[in-house]
Image (cartoon, rainbow, N blue to C red):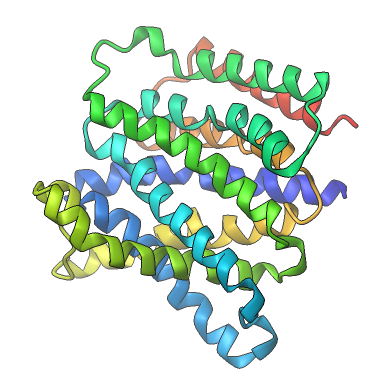
Length: 294
């Protein structure tokens, strides 16, 4: 089982590129809907040929309801995790709110999966959240941004938790990780397409709802690489690992994401690695130790 923990950890490190890349492509003019829809669409299209060749990877009929709901959760997660960034909330605030998901995962795991809430899990959550606070320094942020963006980021944390919980609840261990990734990405893309007319009717801002194919060719190539790094590979790793470990533990291990995002920001945006990064990163790593110590 030890390798399953590390599958989730390495997946979380790559998932750290989600918010970093979201800011990057938002600055290039991608809308909120384009960020969410094209990311899962590209993943689906890359996996589909392998599924068509090996029929055993097909989604079983009895799992259709699971993937319909999983896709809906995934679609809302795509919109909410990018929503704060597109709406002008600082990346640090978005990440802090998004990575509060272990709190939701621990208690929703108890409610939906009957997983026990142990002192070890509670301690790991507290240490992890303390690490996130140090890492992101929310008290130093001068402008928090729009209320809508903050609400979006909070909902992102809730739906990230539900994404982990629902996958654990509905027989995901019986599915090949290739099947699960295709089911999540494919149904998320379908839901985003179905919901787009309704979202566009109520929200007229093109920075939110624009869905265009008239994007510069080089941007498509960069976005394809982004989809592979931020969604395809980490999804494989996460789904492989979560087959055998508790959803609440997986949620805590996913806190490696802000560590990865901070290092990327330091490398590409020249953000300094101050005491907050050292202390926050150490606390998050320690929370991971508490989570896997058993």
